[in-house]
Length: 112
Image (tube, rainbow, N blue to C red; front, side, top):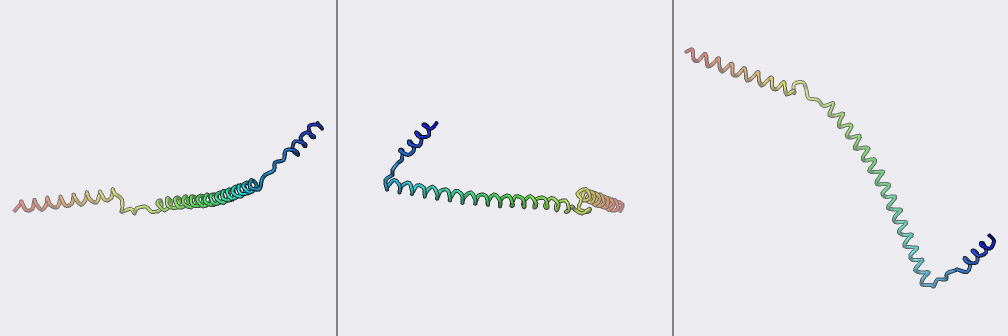
């Protein structure tokens, strides 16, 4: 076990990589690009979270408005005199009355 630890420490200690100045600058630039991308993604993530919150709020308000509209539709009922069967009955009575009156007038004229 001790031999393994010593071998491990020696292999880690002897396997150092030395970078040139150009390579270290390239790595530094890559790290900066990655940091920028991470910041950009976190900003986008927070904006999308805000958007989701707003859309949920809008959905809640729309559902409330729908419920209020349903209640309003139940409250707004036609008056008793705005019934289609009542209109039909009025029309039938008026038609019968006019026809009957015309027949009586025609009979009165035929008498003379």
